[in-house]
Image 1 (cartoon, helix red, strand yellow):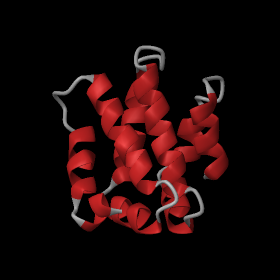
Image 2 (cartoon, one colour):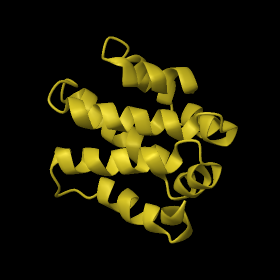
Image 3 (cartoon, rainbow, N blue to C red):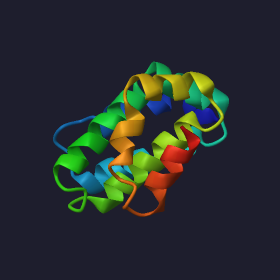
Length: 122
């Protein structure tokens, strides 16, 4: 994927973690990153090295603290991004488990499908 080859994934990871952007914009960055890592091992590896799992989990936790209902689109794309990130990629799965992703995502099991997908691929 050209975005990974050219380092474009780093832009979207930094954008996702920028403090002063709207949740809708953050959701768009998570969408792009989910596409970058979807079935693309090099994308998964590069994004993992840039801290994508930790960043996504941090924002999922923030959404949970805000009752999970205030930013459903952001929560949806963060969880899809995580699921695509560690789908079939054991190193990312191990990192997710080390970062307590399972216990964090378990809190969302009553939410719509993307959260369940993220849990099932972990």
